[in-house]
Length: 470
Ligand SMILES: Nc1ncnc2c1ncn2[C@@H]1O[C@H](COP(=O)(O)OP(=O)(O)OP(=O)(O)O)[C@@H](O)[C@H]1O
Ligand SMILES: [Mg+2]
Image (cartoon, rainbow, N blue to C red; front, top):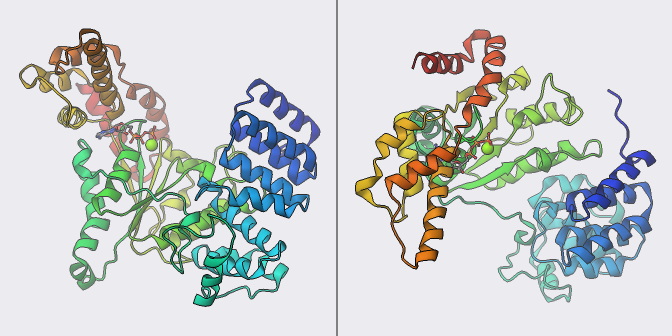
C-alpha cells in the first residue's frame, strides 16, 4: 500500500495549514515538530515548539520537544536545563525523556550520573540495553542496577529535581513512571454482567486470594479475555473494576500509545508496555480498541501492520517474558476485524459479549449511579424506570442520572434550597436520553452472522433474537 511519507513537502504544507487553523492542537504541533526535526529542519522544528509554548506556557511535551530540537543542534546545556525543569513525569513521553536525559548528562560531563541513570533505566525498561547508548558511551549493554556508591553521587549531584525525587530509592525510577492507575472501584460498581465477573474472578481474583488451591490444580493466575460489544456498555468500566477488585495496577494501552510513525518503534512501544505490566504484577493490562492494533482485513495504514501483530502475538504467548499474574483484557466494538490468530488457544481463548444491560441490570446500574446522592426514596420507583429504558447502555443510564442531578443543582442554586432527586426528575431526564445501543446492532447483525464460524457470535445473534421477540 502506497502511503505518502509524512516528510514530503506537500504533506508538511498540508499539516501546517491544519495547524494554522487550529494553533492550539498540541498533538498536531508535536507531530509537525517531530517530522521537521527528523528531516533536519531543526530551526523550524524549534520555532514550532516555541510558538506552542507561547500559547501553552510550560506544557511538558512541548518542552520535551524543544529540548529534542536543542539536542539535535548540539545545544546540550540548554536542552538539559529544559529537561531538568520538567515535573516528575511527562506522561507517555517518559522513556523518550529518560533516554534524552541520559544522553544530555553524558554530553555535559556528568558521565557518572548518566551511567547510573542508564543502569536503572535498563532495570525498568529492559529494551534500554538495545539503544545505542551503551555503544555511544562505552557502557556494557546488559548491566545490573547501579551500586550504591553511584546513587550516592547521584543524590548529591546538582542535577536538579528530576534526579532527586523525594521518595528516592536506589532501584527506583518512579520519577519517570507514568502514573500507575489503581482504580478505586470494584465489581460492586458494575451493574449486571454477572457471567463476566465470574470469568474474571476465576482467572485472577481467586488465584490471588487462594494461591494454594490453584497451585494444587496446576493453574496459574492470569489469562486473556477479549471483551466486545456496543459502546458504553461497560467494557472499560469492567476492566478497571477488575483491577480494583484485587487492588492491582490498571495499565491501559491505546492505539496512540503504541503507534509510532517511525518504522519498528511501534513494536518496541508495545513490548515496553507489556514489560510495564510484568513489573507491576499482579495487574490488569487493558488493551482498548484492540482491532486497531490487530486488524486483519481493515485498512492497515492506520494500524501497525503485520510486524506489530506478530509482536503482539509473541507478547501474548509470553515469548519475551512470562505473563503469569497478568490479566489481559482487550476490548473492541468490532471483533470481526481482528486477526483470527488472536483467538488461538493460549491467546484470547475467551471472547465475551458485553451486552446492553437487561432490565435487572439497568436497575442495578441506576442504583450504582445514584449511590451517595440525595434521593427521595419513596418516589424513585427504579423498577419502572428500568422497564422504560430498554436499549440504553450503562453510559446512557449514567447520563440520565447526571442530567437529573444537573437540573436539581440548577434549581437548588436558584431557590437556595437543596432538594432530593425524585422519580419524576429521573423520568424527565430519561426522555431526553436516546438509547444508544441500537446503532451498533444495525451493523453488528450482519458482521456477526457473516463471521459466525463455529458459532463464536451466537451470543450476539441470540441477544438479537430475544430482543426482537420482546
Ligand atoms: N455495567 C455498568 N455498570 C455501571 N456503570 C456502567 C456500566 N456500563 C457502563 N457504565 C458507565 O458508563 C461509562 C462508560 O462505559 P465504558 O467506558 O465502560 O463503556 P465501553 O463499553 O468501554 O464503551 P466503548 O466501546 O465506547 O469504549 C462508565 O464509565 C460507567 O460510568
Ligand atoms: Mg471503552
